[in-house]
Length: 454
Image (cartoon, rainbow, N blue to C red; front, side, top):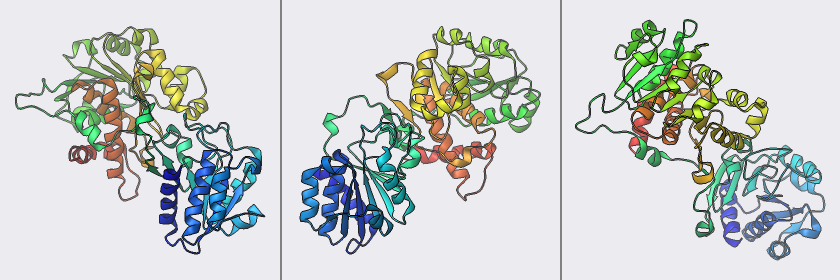
C-alpha cells in the first residue's frame, strides 16, 4: 500500500505541477483503494497541499490511512460539496477492483459534484463504477482524467466501454509480479511483439514460397469491396494475391500485379489461405467451397452472414472470423447492445461456439483463440476514431488473410493485422482530417516500417 501511495502521490504531483498550496480532495471508500488515497494524500499534505478527505463510509474508513493523513495536516471535510467546488485535484478512491454494478446511490451525488468541478480527476487503480475483470459498465461511473493503476493493467482499463472512463493510464509497479498468474486474461501487444511476428523473405524465397492469398470478395453491386480487400492483401507479406470473383476488371485496373480469376475458387489456382466475404452479396456457394478447403480461411462481412457453423467447427485448418459488433450479435443470437456492453465475454463465447479464432472489431478490437483460457485474449492498443469509415474492415480482412498465407497462425495474423491497420490509420489521420479506407491501405508500408524498426 505504501508503494502504491508513493506512486499515486508522485503522479498527482506531476499533474498539479505545483503541490504547495494546491487543494486536493480525497473521495474515500471502505476498501484498500480508499487507504491508498489516504496515504497518498498524507504525502501530498507533507509537501504543502491542502488535503481534505471525504469518507463515503465513516464507520469503515481505513483507520491507519486516516491517521496518517491527519498527522500530516490533512482534515476531514465538514461539507463535501463545498470542498469539491474549489478543488484542484480529486482522488477517486471510492471503490476497488471488486466493485460491481456501478456506484452506490449514496456515492452518486459526490461523484457528480466532483465531475462538475474544474478539478483534475485521478482514479486510484481504476475509475469507481467500472468492472475491473470485464470492462463492463452497469451503472454510474466517475469518469477520470487519469488513472494510476498498480501491479498490472486490469481488463477494465483496456476494454470498452470501461476504457473510455479511465483517461490516461499510468502503471505503478508495487512488487506483485511474482504473484500474478502465469497466463494473463488479457494482453496488449507492442511494436516489438508485432515485429517478431511479421514475415521476412529469405534469400531463396520466391512469390510462391512467400505464400499466395486468395481473395473472394466483391460483387456487381460492391466491386469496391474487392478492390479494398486486395489493397490490404497486397501489403500483408504474402508473395502474391489471387483475386476470385466478378470484380476482376475493377481489381486489375487498380492493381495490375494481382492475379485474377472469375471463379469458382476451386478452379482459380493454388493458395495458402483464403479471405472471403467483403461485399460478397448472397453467394453462399463460394463460402461453402472455401470452408471445404484445407488451408487457413478468414471470413468477414457477408461471409459471416452466410456461414455454416458446423462447417467451421469441422475444419482441420485454422479459421479466423472478423465480425463487428452487429455481426457478432447475429452470430450469437443476441442484441448488438449486449455485445458492445460485454465485448470480452462475447469474443470468448464466439471463439468457443465456432471453434475458431475471432477478431471482434470496434472501438476496442479483441482477438480470442478457441482454446479458452489457455491463451490470453489480445486487445489491440492501436487505432484511430477515423477508422470508422466505409471499407476499412475490407482492408483489414485482406491484410490478415495475407498474413495467414505468409505462415502466421490465426491468432497472430489477426493480432498483427489489427495492430498494423490501427497504426496505419494513425499515420493517415496524422493531420486530424478524415481519411478513406484506401488511404489506410496506402499507409500500411509506413506502419510496417515503424514496427520493424522497434
